Image 1 (cartoon, rainbow, N blue to C red):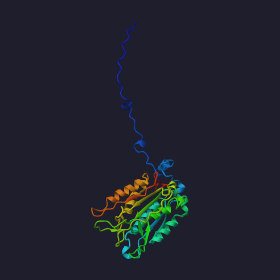
Image 2 (image 1 turned 180 degrees about the vertical axis):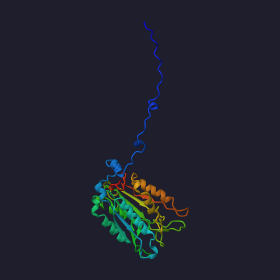
Image 3 (image 1 turned 60 degrees about the vertical axis):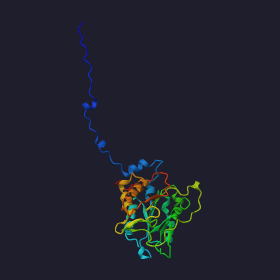
Image 4 (image 1 turned 120 degrees about the vertical axis):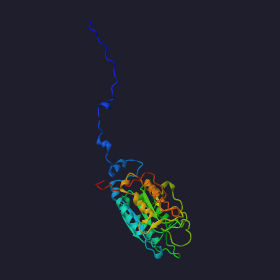
Length: 308
């Protein structure tokens, strides 16, 4: 019989990837950047995100009120023209038609807000912005006719009463974003900045008398978020050339590249930037106030732009 040689001992083989050079796909190295529309599609059916349809987006509308000139010229808000220009451009870039008013009295602000609550687009829009920029004190916005002997004022709480579920049913379950650039008091250290409070006068009064509580089961005040320029009793600063510190930083944060950030993230970043402005004697800290959003609200800047 033929002699059978023993089989050679098994040797460990090298892993396959040592033998075959696999080049990773260029798509894996540089995955395509998600567009605004891709991101919107990914959130479209998310129950934790406020719904925005293309038709909603086309019907967006915002209210912008800027008091620059006052009956008492000492109160004129130099630099506020820049704020108005910047906010109008920003709101338009986010898809909002801007209803714009200037130099309103307290009653004029009230009338403008009531008129806005009846705007025909509110039934179709997904959200609204209300931006009011003037002098202020705790719980109040000063009207253009404010003087020591004529306390021309608008109570901030009226914004919520006008746009809540009882005041504006067209905005039920829709985000209502309020931005107030105004002082909320007179406290501050020495500063070379001008500020958005009255130049003289008595200490700020307490907020308007408490309004009778409404039926909680109806979610009377829901889907609001407000960004106020400063903490209670403190000033909000404005540069005469560049506008207010708050609005400057809102414009920095609300960029087209920020489309994957929801409104709370955006406002928190604004708070961080503003808090770093000034020095040890002049500080400002914006406040996120009356936050009753129960979902994430994304703005999707440029959603209907074919380039996005």
